[in-house]
Image 1: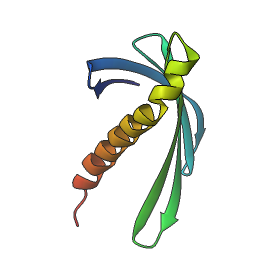
Image 2: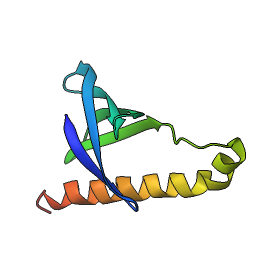
Image 3: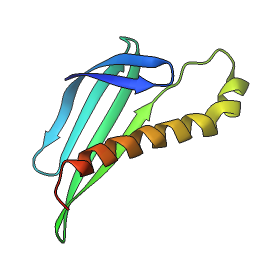
Image 4: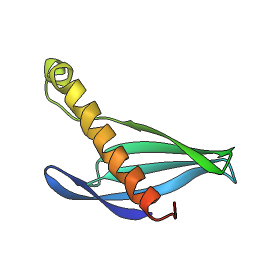
Length: 98
């Protein structure tokens, strides 16, 4: 899998491979952003009334030079991650009829 990820600093390439595949309920993908930052994402599909619920789990590290910087920015990084996830879900939802 190869895709572009947009953030406030621009567009970055993400390259990944599926490492777990349990159709039709779960996939796990291991990826690298900009060739060096690892990301592991798991998608779990659950049947619901009227459709399918997708639960996305993501694990990634944000490189910093000092541990105290990580603590200062942790809330901001979480907010940016949630913002990116919300945008992705809104894009997916817009492709389906109401």
